[in-house]
Length: 80
Image (cartoon, rainbow, N blue to C red; front, side):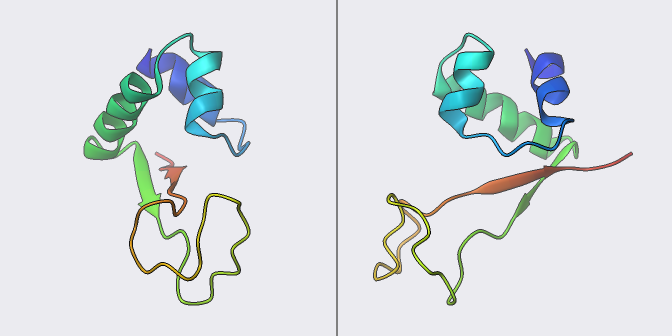
């Protein structure tokens, strides 16, 4: 599944965890484990999501809440 995930991510499209899970016929938790493994091995890099300039661009992001919960998380492919 990791190879298939990398192939999907190479097109540069932004995906939600749920969309990737459906595309890969797996569960979101299993997908996140693959993402964590790719991050650990240096294939993906977590990048900053919202910060103090957050404009609440998503219905799941609460700009008034300083906790991490609900704020988007992004990763990018590491070229190599």
